[in-house]
Amino acid sequence: MEEALTIRVPDGPALEAGLAPVANAKGGFVVCHPHPLYGGDMDNPVVIRAAEVAQAAGYATLRFNFRGAGASEGVHDKGRGEQEDVRAAMAALATHLPAGSRVGVLGYSFGAAMAARATRPSVPEAPLGLIAPPLGMYGFDFLQTSPGRLLLVAGTADSYCPVEALHRLAAISSAEERIIEGADHFFFGKLYPLGEAIGAWLAGAPPAR
Image (tube, rainbow, N blue to C red; front, side, top):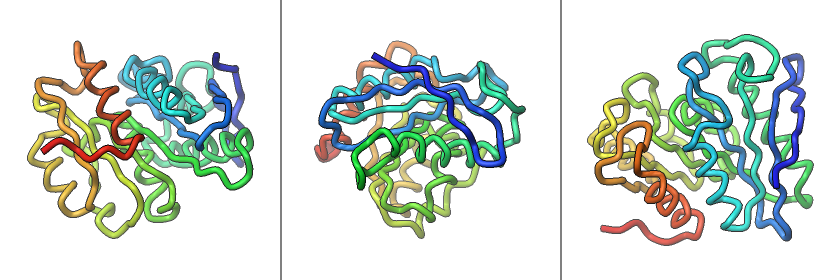
């Protein structure tokens, strides 16, 4: 059961969020939604699926709306202030976990770009899962200089995240790569295998070869 939460971004807006505590949590994951100017928000099906899988694996989750989305204050900041939104969400989730718990981030599409920039290379200990990162729209090469556990997952029919570009990023970043056969950028009809891929990464299972 999620609890409504308000996140205060330092010197920034108040953000709408939903916290899902888990008994004896292993840690926590913030889940970041796709581009708000194209209808993305915290209730996106991929975001919900990622949060449910993380909860089932024993992690507390926090979904939130970026500034200007849903009931969150502020206006879209073209990816600048949104990185501060991610960091504020991580700090908020940490206050609901035992001291020393690790907080990671799962980001989808635009949310993947913001999650990567908010955590790398400044927070390399945070596990980072990038779902359908829009490699054709944002640069991700900075991930090659950052250690830390990294997941890249996308579909073979994703025009915003070409498989060859994903292979290249996985190679230079030493990321764990998981490919969903036939999935497009929105994972229509492919939410179940997407969840399996995220769950396997959370469990530490090696990718299929």
